[in-house]
Amino acid sequence: MSDVSATGLLDALEAGDISSVSLVQQALDRIGKIDGDLGAFTWLDGERALEQAGEIDRRRAAGQPVGRLAGLPVGLKDNICVQGWPTTCGSRMLEGFRAPYSAHVVQRLLAEDAVLIGRNNMDEFAMGSTTESSIFGPAKNPWNTSCTPGGSSGGSAAAVASREVLLSLGSDTGGSIRQPAAFCGIVGVKPTYGRVSRYGLIAFASSLDQIGPFATDVSSAALMLEAISGHDPRDSTSINCPVPSYTQELHEPLKGLRIGLAEEHFAKGLADDVRQAVEQAVAIYRQLGAEVVSVTLPHAQYAVAVYYIVAASEASSNLSRYDGIHYGHRATGKHDLTGLYQASRGEGFGPEVKRRIMLGTYALSSGYYDAYYNKALRVRRLIQSDFDAAFQKCDVIAGPVTPNTAFRTGELASDPLALYLQDIYTLSANLAGLPGISIPCGLSPAGLPIGLQLMAPPFAESRMFRAARMYEEQTDWHTRTPTLTH
Image (cartoon, rainbow, N blue to C red; front, side):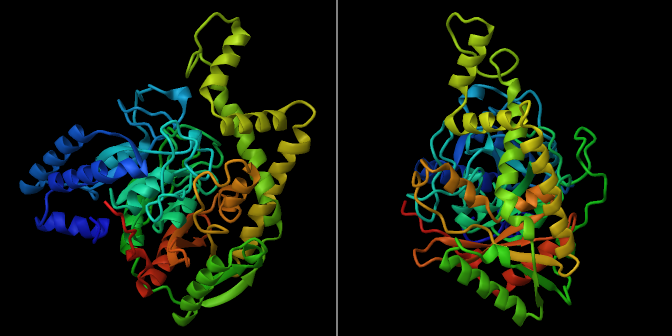
């Protein structure tokens, strides 16, 4: 699997050059060999995966129809429900919980005959940028295991970057797919809000959360998004509009492409190596005939503040159900009702989750609601209006994914604000509901990956994929793999 993409493996499966069973067994063997040092997986369902792969091989050999992902092993972030699987969100609060139903995206994957192989590590309740807060311990970056793979979907990204699997699903609330993809040198996609159903995704911030794919290349990511997209009446925010054939449209010429550059994405705080890699990527677009135009996002300076009020407020509301009675960990010992709530939540949640719950509860409290939450919502609308105006001048906006490359695990553990600023270039897409993609565009002098972010108007994923593929065809960054000394 280290030398091909997911779409390449599908061709080999269709040709009979390999079997799904051998592919799944190879993935399980590789996970067993290297994941002890990576921590990308927290749980495996190897026996059922091999049974499912065997059934797909039998159907394929008999000439029966199979799905678009038939036989490919896929990893799933630990906040996406799979019936019968442990679903912990990396938290003691849900330790031992097994989902009674499957998420919509899981049903879509199974309908397309993907082989679900196991659980990927994550920051507790998806709140973080490092995958350090998981009860299973931190995930590591395959390019340098002393560094973080990013978060909160760090395990999903590390699994794909190390070629344990070639496809995985994560969730993105403020950059939790794109930032780990950039840190790990792979492709990560945050779809338009409403493009992919959130049914069965354990909620962090409901107006921001979206499920999306990780892959080694743009075409595989497009195939994965095509498979999981579509209307779901069980999710009131799911949009009922047709899903384009991203894979068929991927190679159509994109003439007259206008690339927007926002000065706010190249301000103080951006590392020189990241800036240079992004500028070189833009230069390649110019060589391909794209027009580069300047755009402005004047309210971007408020995005971090707005995000951490809106997201924390919604987290405070969503996580109130975990009280030891309705859901979640229950403290032992004798307690009155209030004491049971306090003990259960105090034991079940980690420090970062508590910090955000307290911040959100304060912002929603009487006397502060208008000053903080309501004001944040008004500025959020201004941020969206900035993008609306920018997309009148350009087709996609290009820029960095992160202000720096992957840093050492634990390096920013005592500085929450520095961690929050890791999402400075990504969270605006969530606030505005836009699609965004991270694609590899370079390596730092230390040999760590750098990501290029493309953002497009709502439901313009096809255009975004085509623009990303234009760049990918001219470079080989997506083919670079980490050297694992095992």
